[in-house]
Length: 295
Length: 297
Image (cartoon, rainbow over all chains, first blue to last red; front, top):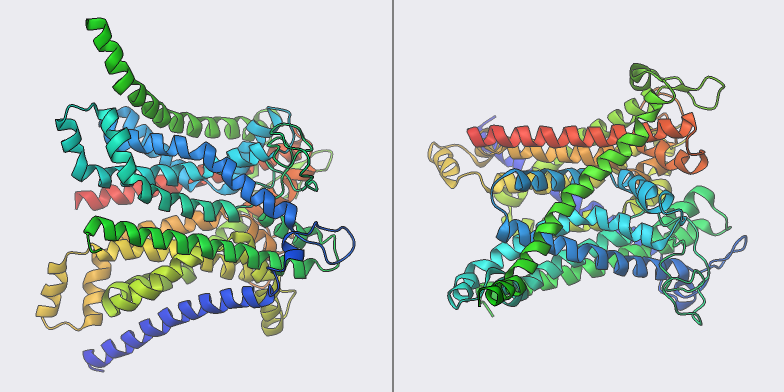
């Protein structure tokens, strides 16, 4: 067989593999959306789950997922951005820099279940508070810290190129330059990273099983307090998120329509992830345009 | 005057510098404390329960409730290893093929379709993969090959989809930076596109591709829920691809909640968490070694 024929055959094979993968994704997502049809029904989204009978909703879990996302981001963002600034602007070659790099790599590759168990030790057993939303949010924050640090480091590095010298030349200190000049121009890129992290937090379950727990109290909105356990905004109550709920439905199945609820809840999760993805992509495109000046 | 100057510097520079340095240090402290806490719990199997490390690693006798508990984690170690290696065997060729496609066959389609698809694959939560595995894959396996559906094979297939984006995107980065000169030289010698890709591009990018494969392997090893949902969780070695078995992560998810803290059973579970941590650290060291090799060349 001539080299040209072989070349054509392999080109065809590569086309087949690539289209197979894309087809797989399309069928996966359309299957999830098809099976979970009706997941945006307000009765399902805003209804409370039922025990032993069908027709329950997912409102407490959905609320917990969003609330967990917010609390966890509040914890990670300052540390991640701070460490990113340090790595890109202040760090000098040496022991500390090497230690931080190795730590980030180690943390990034830790299995999420191990991070969850660390959370169980530190945030649950050591504080004797039981499973709490705060414990779950902290565990997820640990999980996301390495990627957020990397994103901020890269954002600060690429934003600094154009504007840094000008600001320093005007007599600003390094920190003033970072705070007033670099961070604002790095912000969109950091935001893209945060949105992608948000998608991951939304879907995370393994790290939450033994930190935020597997029960979701019915939310009563008359009571607004951060610490009172009966308040929906309490960070000291157990908070089962949507993804943990899907896992529990499958392993325990307390309701007759468990499969249906799991289908719909999966569809909600996938829709949320799609939204986060599109948002991040849109932002990324805007940043690219503003950097390259095409618009 | 000098003092005021210091205060001014303090407010405008040292505070910010201090805080950001602190954030960097916190990352190191956090990593060390994760290792320390998991290790202090995980070592008690060997220090308090006097169980031998060799038996823990190589024995397949798992009977943690007996009067004389048997804590051999062999079944789970073998399960994790088989399922991860199986997933990589499927994913690595496909991942490299996608990476080649994105840069040499059709960059346009690659950028517009393959890249976003891979990002979506990453975005789908692992419980959703597990749930699809249960509701779609298991019936297919049951109908096609018999058995109960819950099997090593199901775990391998679900994992291979989950680690594909990791392998593909890192291989793609590696292939992207292969010098244009190499490619032009190969074309200039009259090589076809496939000859160039298979004999010049892929060998030149092999360090990066290998890094991607190791990262994929690490991700497969640590993935918990999706695997736990489809692998069947029976406490015995898998007799074949269609037989259920357990992995380190699946037994951790299943049993951590039903054991009493301080019991031999519970301690053995912590030892497995420590083992997972050690394994992920070993993967990091391998990746670093690959990176070093690349630099020297």
